[in-house]
Image (cartoon, rainbow, N blue to C red):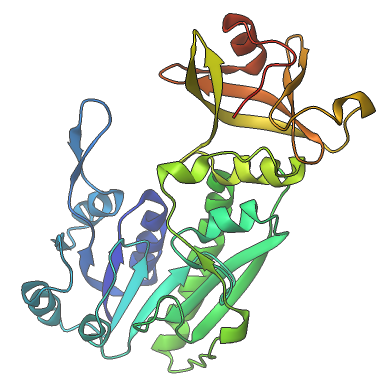
Amino acid sequence: MRVIFMGTPEYAVPFLQSLIGLGEEVVGVVTMPDKPVGRKQEIQEPPVKVLAKKKNIPVFQPAKINETSSLEALKNLDPDLAIVVGFGQILSQKLLDLPKLGTINVHFSLLPKYRGASPIQAAIINGEEKTGISTMFLVKKLDSGPVLLQQEIPIDKKDTAVTLTAKLTKVGVEVLKETVLLIREGKVAAKPQDEALSSYAPLLVKESGLIDWKKSSKELYDFIRGMYPWPGAFTFYEHGGRKHMLKIWEAEEIPRIELDHKAAANGTILDVLKNHGFAVKCGQGGLLLTRVQSEGGKVMPAYNFVIGHHLKKGDRLG
């Protein structure tokens, strides 16, 4: 089959590699434009583009994929199938209809649960015990097309968005291979999604990481893992007469706290544990913060941070 692959981030690379390994004729790769990255704002090519160039596959990087010029360029490739993995733009109906056999998306959740831009983070933040991969035909309505295949995996209690993405990518590559083989053999049996069971995982922004200390220790433990590494869970502390941001990279749940701590305000530092970290009061239970990062500083052990910034028992975060 003549296949167009549409993807941008690092986790999309193994999917493109698997299509090449299957022997499909990848006639074009569509990815986002190069962009400046890091403090030096050096121009960087998307990871998918790097692989495509190595394999001598034509690369298209339209700023607006649905413009007439972009549609014409892709139409000229005469595609049988398009496959989308983390591309980064909304596709018009005209574009979805270009491939003869349809446009397939690999989605990192068990649809119809967690449609949208951040399904991996949402699954962790909401304390799910399982998630998975879904392949589906793309339609105009977001992530609501008929599902072809799904595979479930458990979520470990220590998984972060990074580790869960890696696990799902490994599984997703195999699910995509099976999906492509079914399409090639004409054995597709797509099933419509149950709209009554749908939920949405919106795009994360920097402000999404703000910690609400009224939530339970379990909720905040999940929140910190889901927000790692971006945008990162954060709170505020007072030092030198003003408030500073503090990112929380690692923590441990304290399901129960001592009775004499019950009256403390949420966000209060309950105790400082030498060489380990500091405990903070939550709506229920507490969190032992173990690795943190001050505004403009480096990631460090939480105990070192407390000592260096003269925070103490009774001080309040938030």
